[in-house]
Image 1: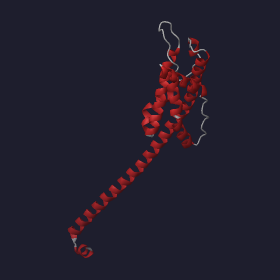
Image 2: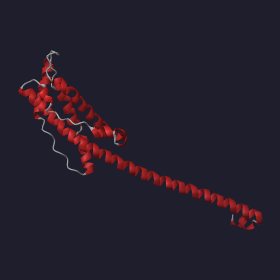
Image 3: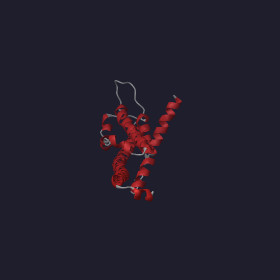
Image 4: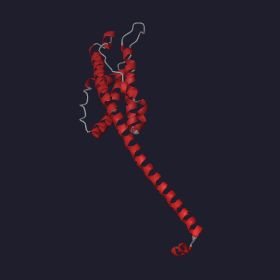
Length: 202
């Protein structure tokens, strides 16, 4: 090869040199492009992970607060059922379930999260909305002629509170924060079980 190259003269050697330079130039461009692509992929992956962590942290904080209020609401329903067995409009004034503003604002970012976490978060908020929707129906109405069971509120509340627990445990571990104490739901479970037995006997 080297002997052949040394025998080239004039225009031949110039042409070969130009071609070789062209080939090496193209190769350098390809290598450089691939290297930049790899760096960009790493940067994008890092930014995506950072954004996903920020979204998860925001949802975690909101879910913790709503979960506590859901537990308080479920206990109010259970204790009212145990004391009087009926609900009036004043009862609704005691309910302070907040609107999940962060969840709504970050809905288009949920795709950044792990699929299992997405399912847990959406299931939690679905049950939250069921609680909010059924609460007014607990109030006794003479026009309606019948009362709704407190189970219509307690069941989705229990599902929300218990169902989200593995997810918030995983998020707390990932963020290295202390997990809040589980709410006390003894009265809630007791009333819910009693209502289920009523339906079974009917």
